[in-house]
View 1 (cartoon, rainbow, N blue to C red):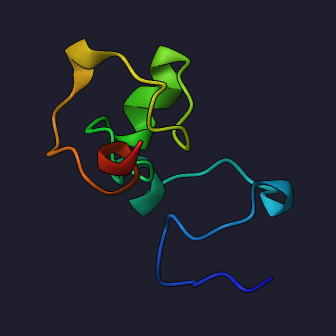
View 2: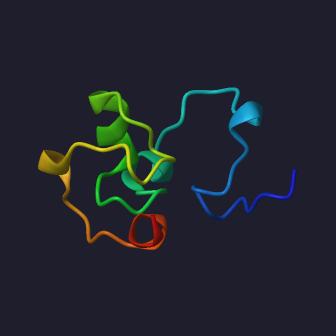
View 3: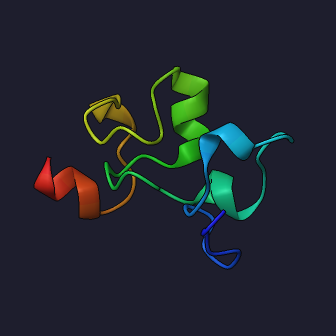
Length: 68
């Protein structure tokens, strides 16, 4: 499907068939500074750089967040 198997943030949501774990949970796919795992717990969207709880920013904000 044109994704990179070595990049936990390179996936097509429609093709996800198992619960995400490991590297994906530890990543920050949208660059908002909140890990994907925390975003799932918070009920925010790990693919939307504008959907996050500022109180949970633990990473340097980057990528999509900076351009949003």
